[in-house]
Length: 324
Image 1 (cartoon, one colour):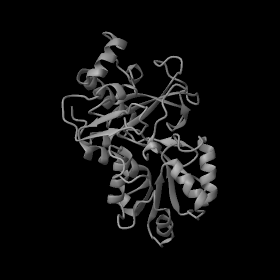
Image 2 (cartoon, rainbow, N blue to C red):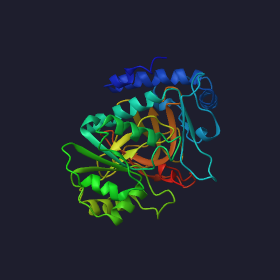
Image 3 (cartoon, rainbow, N blue to C red):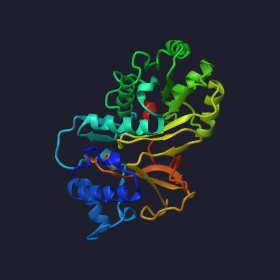
Image 4 (cartoon, rainbow, N blue to C red):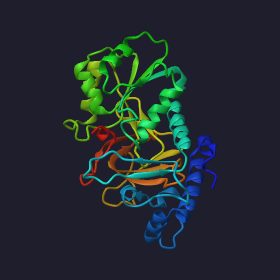
């Protein structure tokens, strides 16, 4: 299996993606214990020949099983945020640098080189929250950008205001958990019209839950912005999708979204219809690249997608519970 190489970064066509996805499926069906058992129950002796026939592993298995392909000692174990009442998902990552490389590639495909940014984070510092893939990603982004101008500012909002008001010739990215951005907006009305403001999730118990449109409206008014950007990622995935406004997300070429019917997880919705989000992440070569999430969404004709909510029975989860 050679998907650890830069081959996934060279995917340009639907056919190339299909071949890589089938290659990954055949590898993981034979080398990921829990996924093999799941596929055997679903498929019996059937051998899928196209993506729509591939079973997607329910994301809850990352809480109850060690989802790995092959036999290795993980360099890092990423865990989902949660309370003591919830069981955390665990993603056993063979090589941390692979995750960081994938994340950087995904960001730069949509936003350009990190070298042209200062990255400011309304997130808990990586020292306060061990096992967070989001923190590792943002810390890496800071190190790859103008690191002398960037940093974590969740508990230092006065310093963040000072930093944002400093003249800067490059681009500025302010990335934060939604409750942190809302708190900042309520207490610090500031013109950020030349800043990319990116939220990474909902309130997750920190504040009253708001739909994305309400959140973006509040942030837009406070920061004098036309659009609020969003990041779609999770502990169980190594890749991220990004929205530059209106909650419409684009994926990288090695990541694909499918929307399943809510009443039949093995059938798919037409574009524009709401259903459950399935994700193919070819970067998940050492775990499982075919994940059935608990998110609801819909696809558009051009391949972009929206996240509309979560299934009622799903757990509250997300990066906003990282600070206790």
